[in-house]
Image (tube, rainbow, N blue to C red):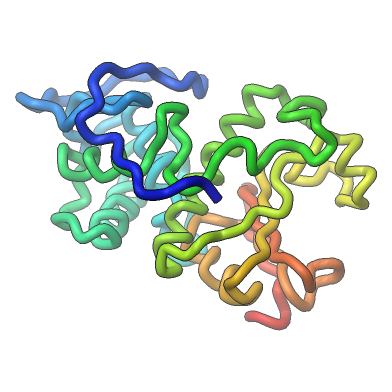
Amino acid sequence: MKRTGRSMLGLLGAFTLSLGLLGGTSVLDPAPAAADSCYTWGETLSQGDSGSDVRRLQVRVAGWAAYGDPVNIDGVYGPETANAVERFQSGYGLTVDGVAGPETYSQIYSLQDADCTPAHFAYSEFTSGDGSGFSGGNTSTSNVRSNVLRNMWKLEAMRHKMGDSPLYVSSGFRSVSHNDAVGGAPNSKHTYGLAADLTGAHSLCDLARAARSSGFNGIIGPGAAGHNDHTHLDTRSGRYWNAPNCF
């Protein structure tokens, strides 16, 4: 977990974190929300819009997915994205309309740091345990960082839903050699930056249950072989939920 109690509101200037995002945007607002040092949206977004602004928004609301229905990070503002925005708005006491405008952006700005990570998580929590950082995995370092960032935002949403109490990451990205050394599954999601193992004050089953509505299609927890001391969460294309002691 990362330090708390900070706000990015009122900061001027913006720079973008490269996530390989391309595309256009839509109707301009007369006045954007307060600028943020990570990324500033200059327009209201709603259903029918598409492009890089939508994709960046989707990364930040993906943890507000419906039960078992992750938000696709595809740059298309459809009903799935609108519903996630509504849940985000409701979760933070905002006007609930499924439209991303100044009020919604201001809440996002207050949750993110200059490197685009969410308020309570940092890249350092997800680096490989063998000291190789984000290198040596089954994809490029830049892809690992992008995948880790997406999972951090899901965890930020999950943390808020669980009463804003800390979530503890015991394992994030693993280099292939480190994954082999700790007995990880071949081609593990950890080697792509797509997984996080959680321990801590919450029960492992509570973590597994909350993850079902926080955008994680991969959940392995108590009752599954080798998972009685942590809850494994990952992002994958198909659903695999295996926590027999929990659900």
